[in-house]
Image 1: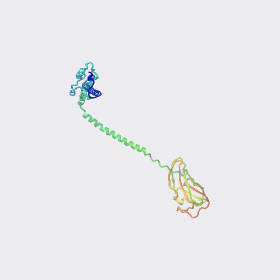
Image 2: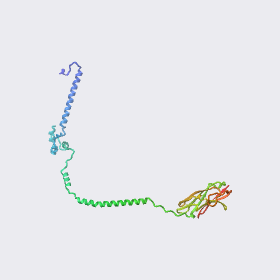
Image 3: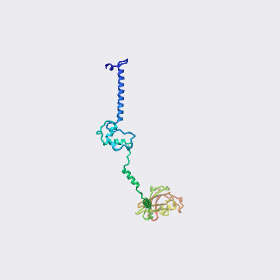
Image 4: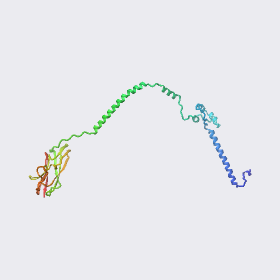
Length: 298
């Protein structure tokens, strides 16, 4: 026996021991593969082996799949009939054994209901009559909706476009207050003077203010000597139409060139210049109280 265990040969003992270990390992691996193959082929002891693929759907009856003895005989695993429970494992085995697994066969009750439903005659004339009766109602309701929408659009347009306010009445001259200003009171002879003119609505209501050369005059006097006037040149007065609210003021500007104007509206000047002294510029709206501004020519 010791001679068998001790390797004898031209090579070293380690080489022979390695070869023996490889042979033993290969044999163990083969043995394990065979055992795994047999276990997979026979099935585990707690499960029923799947039936042959040639079995028809009618052969897998509830009694055959739920019997623990039949499943034990087919697998050949040696499990006793008492070890297999007819509850959950049998249900899973029957679901696996059926080739139509995942498809729920139609029950007699359901199919009977379907047949009864299809067998009932449909009242064709009644439905046609009801649909014919509904069509006029639907068209009438549609026309009513369209009419309501059109009226609502008209109402919204009328609401969105407010009515234009009525034109106020003309301003009463007696309720207008005139104003006149300039940069300075002392002016050199022959220099231009710019007047800032205003008219304020002193009434409690809005009024239409109308300014033109027909109802307004700005003039410059020295005593009784008429020096200059816008009546001699109508284009100097701007045409103004403006609505003045209560307390609102209209303003404009007119310039005097520092010379004497020629009568007759020709917009020409007389050759002689005003002399040094006191002069008054008067702003006059027809029907309103005039206002004056002092000028000192030097």
